[in-house]
Image (cartoon, rainbow, N blue to C red; front, top):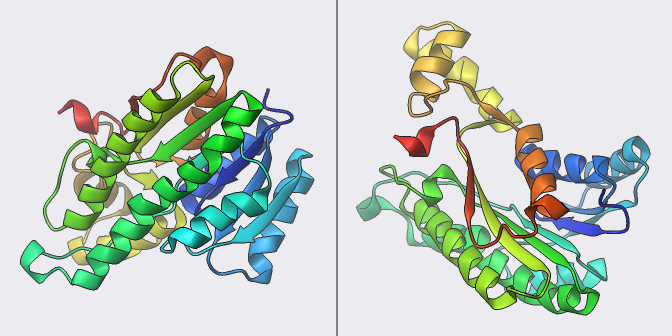
Length: 256
């Protein structure tokens, strides 16, 4: 379905980003993985995707907190038919105790990086006559929780950036949308389950349903494959008139 397309996915050596890269590769797209670490395991991940799905895959290191490196990532990729802005970090604290450097870092990685990569990729998409920009926002791009001011501000900003990008590319065979996941079962989330079981003196299923997924009405985690499958759909011809909107994959969280 996506043969001949090149997808660049930021923050894609684990979790949601890796799940998206795998599903795009399964659909035939060549992929560029990214993180800032640049170790042997990162390059091995790209080799593994290439071997499993029969596509071209490579790893390019870039620090998403630095605008110049964000733009260099796209330049090094050489082209960019599909851009998935996924890189993100989190920090939790009350506003009056929130470290200013953490605010700056979260806004840089979670929001400004998407501006820089998009600015670099759009001329390539226009030259190719086709493009898809997919921004990974969050249920927290549509609603809020206490103690996550920077993350929520950035994710609301990603939703707004997606709308503006869509308006600026309307009629150019380029779309831009934001996927808004709720809680997704990633290795980082999986690692928190035993700790939560101990703190609350609950079994695995109970702590997931009553504590971790208390705001997610389905009481089930989304999977990285489901987020990746949503990204594949947004790249398909069926989604050619879907642009400037959000797609929630949150088990009903934002329906409350």
